[in-house]
Length: 349
Ligand code: SF4
Ligand code: SF4
Image (cartoon, rainbow, N blue to C red):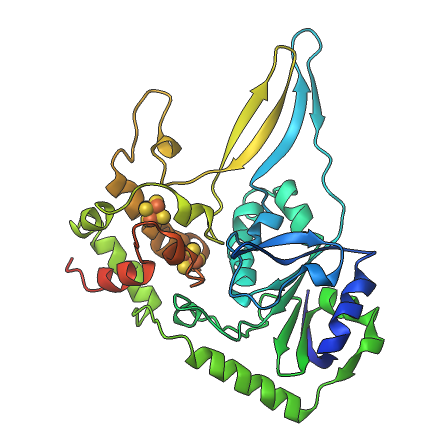
């Protein structure tokens, strides 16, 4: 639940390890951990395991709520058929150091798991999680959250936001959950002053100014409608000619949420398992009859764009992209969603 007035505090940087140590007995802390040149959100047992000097995690922290592979239930078959529901995790987690764009992505995918059917697997983990964000002081070359009404220092979808303002963190408490987490460790925090608030604003402005790439869609509603008029344009074929269909753009996207459900069985027992899926794979829409409504790569490339920038806004009044830049950074053939969308705006109906 959001708070009506956001409380603002200061946490000295040298007190951060103490704070983490104080909350570790109650919560499993997932934090950015460096492995080789990549950063992953992983459970940590002590503050020294995490790195806060990072741009963004390669796999978005949606993976903490929506596991890449998850057992929904197990069963026995044959004479004694029995279904054993998987026990839902009751551990309380803190996702520490999550970026504002990744937190926004969770708000974007929430309706998928709540609107028509309440998905207990996702919801249990989501409800048990506290999101402690870290402002993105140094956006990367492909960050473009500001093109989609985001900000590198927005507390909007977070329980708590920390902003590095020098030798201390500016701490914004944006929900009851966030307040409760700080309440138990209050002795480490002091109220922020007006000078601290100004420093945070300055840091945010500097970060916003450092975002050099912009997706040039002046009016989001008009662009959503524009896509309706260019569905059959040859433009999509030219984009698809480069695509390898590897699916990296979807697996690593914080708003992609498609999954497949499979049974893994032996003669007398089995498990029903949910796994991430990708609309960039031809099997994704393959019917049992052999018919495939998206037979060509062009159909799949176009679908990825339309799902994020046309179908999702129509269904949920939100663009399903937060401008994190992961799909650009990791596409092996440099397909660039900023260019794809900007140029789509110029295609004649
Ligand atoms: S489409 Fe690309 S830029 Fe947008 S949220 Fe997904 S990975 Fe990030
Ligand atoms: S990452 Fe690039 S090559 Fe791979 S499926 Fe996505 S757009 Fe195609």
